[in-house]
Amino acid sequence: MILRSINVDSPLLEKALKVAIAVGIPLFMFSCKTLDQDKSKHPIDERIISGGTDNYFQGILIYDPQKKDTLYDRNSKRYFTPASNTKIFTLFAALKTLPEKIPSLKYMAQNDTLFMEGTGDPTFLHPFFKDSSLIKLAKPYTHILLSLSNFKDTRYGPGWAWDDYDHYYSAERNGFPLYGNVVHIHKTDSLQVTPANFREKVIPLKFVRNREWDQNTFYFDPDRKDTLETPFIGDSTLIKKLLSTALHKEVRLVPDLPQIAKQTMYSVPSDSLYKRMMYESDNFLAEQLLILVSSTLSDTLDSNKAREHILATYLTELRQPPRWVDGSGLSRYNLFTPESMVHVLNEMYREIPRDRLLGLFPIGGVSGTLKDRFKGDGQPYIYAKSGALGNTYNLSGYLLTRSGKMLIFSFMNNHFTKSPQEVRHTMESVFEWYRDHY
Image (cartoon, rainbow, N blue to C red; front, top):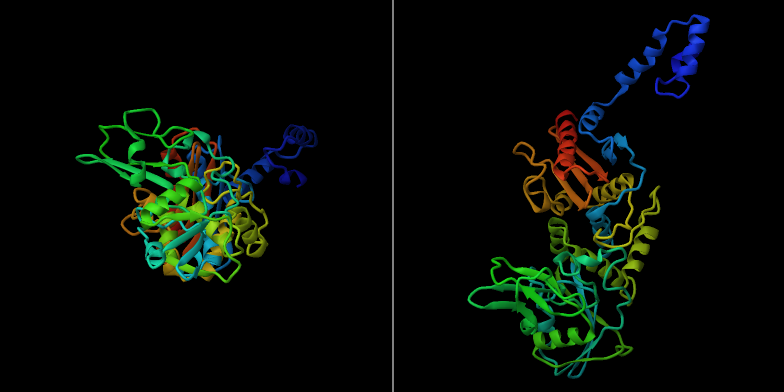
C-alpha cells in the first residue's frame, strides 16, 4: 500500500518498481494513482494543454466573489509582466483618491493677477476632452503667473523603450499637460497642425521617423490619409508659449506661488477620463492619473509617491506585493501576480456599484480594445482590461455566466512565441467553459 502513493512521474519510480518486483507486489497498484490523478483533473486543464501552453509561462486565477471561492488556480502566485493590466491598479488608485471631477488646477488671485500651478490634469485642450475651463478662469485677469516647480517626476517612465519616443503611446509626462502633449497633423487642402505653434516645424516628407529624437521637428508623409499623432518634447519655455497662445495673454513663469490659501479648479467628470484610459488603453492618461493622485496627497507631483501611498494605505493585504513602476504598463520592470490582480478587482467589485464599475471596462465584442475579441454568442460576457507587449498577452476583469453569476479572473501569458491570436483562442475556450457551466 505504500507504493500506492508514489507518483508515476517521481524520480523514485524505477527504484520502486524494482522493489515491487522483488517482493511480489502487483504492478497494477501503480496505475491506481494515475487513474486517481486523471479523475481529479479539472475540465479546464485539457483545454489549456490542448492549446499548446507547455513552452511559455501562464498564470490563471478564477474567483467567485459571492462564495469567496477559488474556482481555478494555475501559477497565480507567480510574477508576470502585466503590460497594460497595470492600468487596473492605476484605476484603483484614482477611484480611491480622486473626487467626482478632475482637480485641474490650483490657483489664487490677487487683484488683476492670477497665480497658478498644475496638478497633472491631462484634459486641458486635449483633442478628445476639449476642456477649456482654464481659458474661462483666466479671462478676467490681466497678469497670468505660472509655477512649474511642483513637478518632481521624470518625463519618461523607468524601463520605457527609447525607440518609442515618436509614437502616440509614449507621450511625455509633466505637471501641466497641454493638447495631450501630442502634435496632431493631417492634410485637407493644406496641412493642418494642432497646436498651430508647430506648423513651421512640420516637414512634408515620408521618413522613417515621425519626429527627430532630440528636437521638435516633425515629418509627415504627404500621401498619408489619416491623422498623425506624435509626442512633442516639452519644457517650461514651450509650456509658457503654448499657454500664452491658448489664453491670448502673456504668461510669465515664477519659481513659487505666494504663501496664501490656494483654490482648486475642476475640469471633466473623472469617470470620463477613467473610461477613456481603459477603453483605449491610453498610456498618457494613465501616467497623468497617478500624477493627479499625488496632487491630492501634497503639493508635490510625483507618481512614485502615489504608488507608495496606495500600496501602503489600501493594499497592505497583498500576499505578493507588486513591483509597480509606472501607471500605464509600458515598462517591463513592472511585475504583478494574477492573485494581486484579482485582489484589486475584487476590492473594486465590493466598493463600486456594479453598473458603474463594469462601464469603466472594455466589453468583449462591444467596445474599446475588446471590440473585436471575446465576443460571445450575441450576449456580452467579458468586461476586462487587456495588456499586450511583445510575446505578452494578459486579460483581467469580470466574467458574467449564463446563470447570471459574476466571476473575477486574471489570465496572464508571458514569453510565448506563437501568435497572440492562438493564445487568445485558448483563453476564450476557458472563458466560454465557465460562462456555460457555472
